[in-house]
Length: 429
Image 1 (cartoon, rainbow, N blue to C red):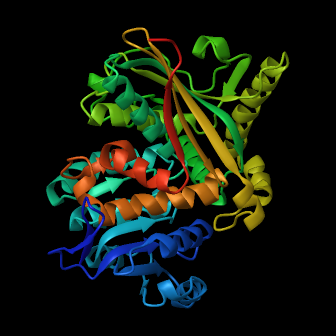
Image 2 (cartoon, rainbow, N blue to C red; image 1 turned 90 degrees about the horizontal axis):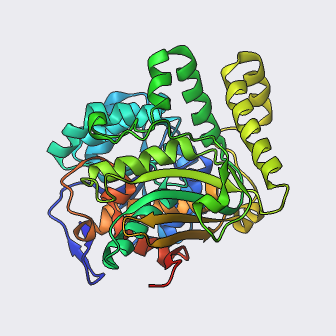
């Protein structure tokens, strides 16, 4: 079985699995984009399967991928069928899945992968799903050696790997650890995918129905493996307005809330905890969005904050949720190729270190964040799990984050795909 080694060659693995990588949900919008990426990037000797509910649709996708995918296998399986998910996991070394919302459609597959020792990557942005998986499957995955890696798209690779790259540079420079750290979405063109919106809708419904769910989602350390070990910084505040100059002297104006902050921040904090607090015990993290530096930026920022709050409330109320369901993108749908290709994002992560130094970590890429760029991030995460095992951080298994499971190996892969990962010191040495 093919596996890459540090010199980039291919060697035979002793694993007796039928497939190196299986893409589950290949007929969905992001699934097809991920399949296209894999067809371009996958080693020719690799054994790949496309999985989903419809053999006819899967065969159509395979035909559209061209000659490189002609020999890929088709696996028909239903996400709600536990036996079929176990069989799918047992046959492959790695599962990459785009089938969400994961609280509704992902439980059987992630369980099967943990139990069968199958590496796994998904696109979830659902706190409740990852919390449940962490509580129930982390020890199982440790025992079987399965690397269960959640959130391998725009949720939350730029945040997670951007902070990792920042912390690594600070440590290499001998400047201690990051302390107060803020991610700023400097520029972005693109929209939320229909699948992301459906996941948000599902989680808000779960919060509306259950007070414990509301408490979990509202906890800034909801994904931390041991809540009692986390620092007490008081209310972190995901939707507050921020004076940009408090973040960095290079910024001006007012920063608005970033809609993905309530999830991304918890992933980054989980990475810190899982890595034995490599970012330090004084590490504080938040995310925001630039709305420009003009005198009107406070007005724009306030409008974004109000709109974000109203959108959450609208999803929680059935009549307005019904209207939004008609207007917003549906799961499995997406923008035109021109819109996807012309999208982009740039995020900057600012910090002051424990020695008083100031740094900025930048992550940027071309392509619509929720579609084009996400398909590249997910595809490369799957490829790293399948073919870069000897290069990954030394973890025996578990329910992990991209930074902890894939680390700089995934950063290197994404750089090859045109992503920017850079760190600059903002003050003289």
